[in-house]
Length: 376
Image 1 (cartoon, rainbow, N blue to C red):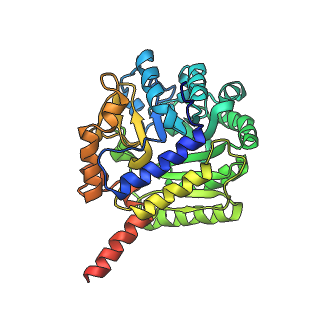
Image 2: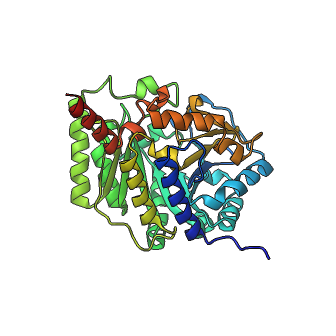
Image 3: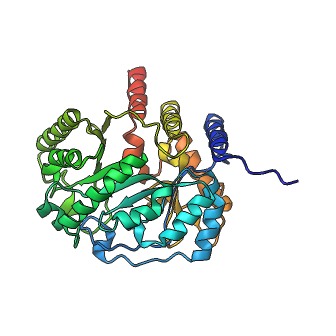
């Protein structure tokens, strides 16, 4: 008689134990499997935001449906959070198929949307399997918003947010508003946190600009704005977060990074073990600060087929091709094993050496400080 599969909660617990073992033994072949997946059937978007490759007319990619379903059937059984996007608008996927696959494997979706399509009708479609919702607005005013997020219009996006946000909060969905810090919007960072609070949000994220478009050099703030001015605005953003009880995360390089929380995790969150998984991740980051915390649990697959160990997906870290290799062949293949060796031995790929996810980990910073003290 066939043994029925374990419930998702038991699989997640087994995976956490396996990950702890993989790291403790410095294994290159891992028993654990990724619990966070980024995979979309396409990289389509209805906007050409100036900091995105879409503004440079990035080619459109479509992942063969059968290939995508096969890969998802292999990896989703261990996944808690599935992000169906590729620097794209996830609601341009076949939403019914996404929900069907998430339901089949008891996975929950993390939608990162530009806010133009997330009205009540579309929200109802994903409602059952939605756990996280990120809304990217990058501004606090109509003028700045419409210059950045071309050709989106401020008023319809705000209307969508006001319609959907109360439903998401009622459902226990983790909603975060996202802001990319750039030379053309840095001065609105504090006002952005105010806007999030005024809309009824509870979490705001401010992240560094990535070199995803040819306008990167023009948009990066570091060589155009006095550091003291940006520091003052970020300090004011923290003050607003404190005053309005907003969770604020600064995904920026030291010394600006940090998390300033005011809202305890809700027991109403739908994904199983949400808080336990978060705390387990913190323990892993604390116990193994030299190993990128994202690389322990994350897998990114782009519609072109490339597979990567982190959300940034630089070509230097391409681990395989989902069109020609199975998940299992990639996950413990030669490239992944070499990448894990580099992490364990701190022989980092160049792209990792300045990445916020690695160097912004406060435990990584403490490790360096301790080594400096010991060597003094």
